[in-house]
Amino acid sequence: MRLSRRHAVVGGFAVGLGACKRARAEGPLSVGVSLLRISQPVFLAVERGLFASRGLEVTLARFDTAQPLADELGAGRLDAAGFIAFPILFERQGPALPVRVATAVVEDVEHPISALLAPAARPLRSVQELRGKRVGVLPTLAYRRWLEAVLRAEGLALDEVTVVPIAPALEVDALASGGVDALFTGDPMAAAAVARGVGVPLGPLAPVPRALGQPLVFGGFALTEALVRERPGAASALVLALDEAIALISADAAAGREAMRAWLRAPERPFVDRYPPTKYLTAAAAAREAPADVPPGAWYRP
Image (cartoon, rainbow, N blue to C red; front, side, top):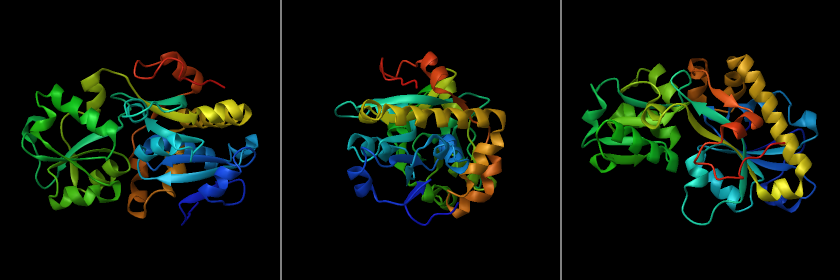
């Protein structure tokens, strides 16, 4: 499924966000998705018709990272969005977002998500060698927080490096050209960097759960309180579709990877098969895990 527009409609006609907001009471659901590996259940639900099979018309709005999804949810321009790292949802400045969360993605050594890469042409021997150097990061609150944790675990403070937020489409080239001395990011950018011979892992795999303790409940799918309150049937159907997608990915990891291939930037599509398996929890399982960084009562179960 190739789409040239920022908005795609699943199971119906195309509308812009403004029109969708006017028709929200009875019209399609406006769902945001980050073009990152963690969002595989959303892409699979689209490609397999899991939303449509539950009577949902979903307008999909694509974003390079999950950071703007929180702002769009807070402004009421999206009904739901994901997948989103929990620090983005719950550690942001300002009023708490009126959201509920359902399902989760988990990072551990067997299911790494984030990667710390050094340039293949200028390899570093250890994380400690980052002192005084420039570290490119995915431009989100979560990756800045997690970089700080990874450095702290290696005896470095965040202010001992220069943090350089880089747009996903520019990350691999920044590492290749020497614009940064290391890159802390996730897929599809990390897989592309390694596959192209631009980057090599620096330190052990899964640096964030190693620094914070395993497993790390990385993030989840968010629904606005308004959606849950005003359209409970639609909210439930949306999450049940994601639960079904998660079950399919758990049975066949390649299904999730392949579902997102056509949605990626063209230079990243050849490397989808290199993604490591991703671990997800259904809505019920995620609510049982209940990590401490998710406020009490925030979990949603259909």
